[in-house]
Image (cartoon, rainbow, N blue to C red; front, side, top):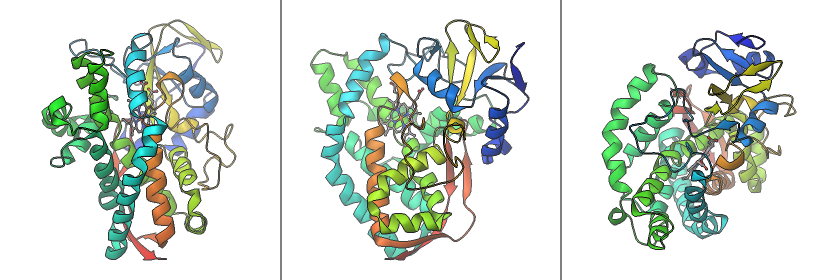
Length: 392
Ligand code: HEM
């Protein structure tokens, strides 16, 4: 790895994951690219490198897997995320239509009613766990309802996606711990993706409509419903949870939001920049890449620290400050380029509605005990966050 700086750091170790931000600063200082000796991979942590790499899908490919260990050849080829053009385009087109801004507009009214219900219930309680009672409860209600899946057994959704996101990292204790519950949920997840398990007039059935129209096969439709369940829940749960924690620990910023609830969408966007739910994804080089005075050879894994790019002071003024009025557009919390999150309109809708409802009806949010982290190889989120709210 001559000509390129290297680091002994383990970005998947518990002490790193508990608070990765000081380590990100040190990694950015190593230069545009560095080697992670422990895993024999390359990595980038600055915005100036991560964002262009995400967009350069021809050089930094996803089809060899976006995790450390590549794809399991025994499994069927995915139709999204871990696939390159031209094969990527078909699934992306179908998912993009299902999760479009127009669909988000249609879902707004129901999502708004649920946000009102949820916030009323929490105000009545006064003290509660902001992770289980809010950050998990709201997305776990509105999004699976929209997909059209059954109400019972939804706790399996979190077990499944926690496992999938852990499996993008190394074989470590976290992955071992989430594998058992994840695999136990797998058959329930696949049952939920079947045509006859979905409510008519749901997002899931829109995917099967594409099969009826001959755009995709029936088998492909089943495998395109699954990413809803894998990528659409834990990410949003952690996005809402992390933003809530930022608001609870920055009372001046919460006050601004309380006085101007129309900032809610912006505040959520800033939350995704400041404490990104998806911290990292891998790519594989399709050719030798000259960078930072060295060369990453072809066919090597490169870890992209998106959450570090979102805190890079070369891109963001006061990068480590959480500011609800900041223009956070351009953050890579949803990725960038052809794989940029296809569910971002839905995630933003959920964030906007729950935070504007809170902002309107809650005067203060304060922690009543230390929040507990839930460690994961790719996701950053919380296990619990006890809070007290005072009504407006
Ligand atoms: C892609 C984050 C919500 C479905 C991505 C990527 C990121 C991301 C970083 C890029 C992956 C890459 O470049 O390799 C998030 C965050 C969310 C969120 C932070 C919530 C705050 C959702 C929702 C869905 C979803 C609600 C709905 C189904 C997907 C899919 C892809 C993706 C299918 C793959 C797109 C492709 O390969 O073209 N997401 N996501 N995500 N996301 Fe999301």
